[in-house]
Image (cartoon, rainbow, N blue to C red):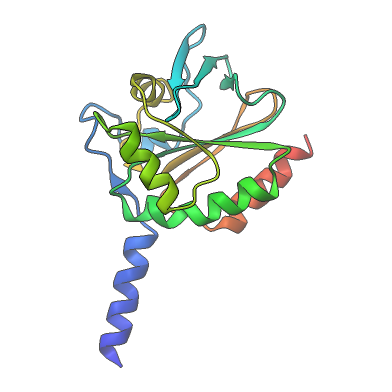
Length: 187
C-alpha cells in the first residue's frame, strides 16, 4: 500500500511541475516569469509553423497581436517535446482548441533548437495535436520578449485585442484555463 502511495505522489509531482528550460541559460527566474506583462513595444517577430507558414507576433503596450488570430483569444504555450508536463497538457489543449475553435487560437512555441520539422510533425501526429506548433528562430525571440521563459510548460493568454490576460507555469487543470477563457470572452 505504501509503495502505491509513494508511486502516486511521484507521478503527480512529475506531471504537475514545470521542467527547466535548458535551451536558454540567460532567461529570468520564475518570480519574474509569473509577472509576464513586460513586452517590447514596436517589435515584431516572425514565427514559422512546421508547414512553413508565417505568423507575425507584434508587440503592443499590453501584450501581443498574432496575425493568424484576428479577433480571437490567443493562448501561447512554450514547451519542449522532452518535457513530461508539456506532453501531459497536450490533451487538455486539444480539448480547449476543439471547444473554442471559433474564439480561441492556441499556438505552441517549441523551445528546442535545431529540431527538424519532420521530427516535429511526427510528434504532432503521435500526440494528435490540433493546434499550431511553431519551430523557428522567432520562437526564442518571442520567449525573450515576454520576459524570458525559464521553466516549461509556460502559457500566456491574450484577449481579442492582444492584451495580456494571465499566465500559467507548469501543467494546470483544464478547468482553470477554461474558466479564464470564459472570463476573457465576456470582455
